[in-house]
Image (cartoon, rainbow, N blue to C red):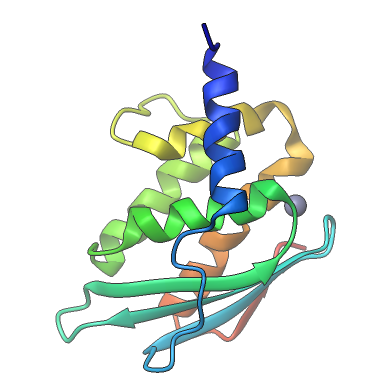
Length: 147
Ligand code: ZN
């Protein structure tokens, strides 16, 4: 019987090995580059918003630790089809989760696999890098760093 943390670990390993939406986007409406110098994670996030501000498509590419890559992969799945405001609200809840401040974590779904990160402060930046980068892309900023 797998424990919860083993299940979570398997999801992270799976998304690290086979990241979803791992590609560049030629017709993106927004793009940003994120760096986490502390760990050496770096990634690019592309978004395509429709005229109503809905995130029609989102993708990423980059290199880094398993946490940063798996988090980026799950982030793309979580925000696709959402509006900018919904995506930013989700980031708030995700950030509360990984920093251990979250109380109301229902509806975070698969993103809950990162709840264990709260015990490792140095990993919080790895887990949230793709979200910071998404936010920068939504706000039309070209680059963001966790430092
Ligand atoms: Zn990292």
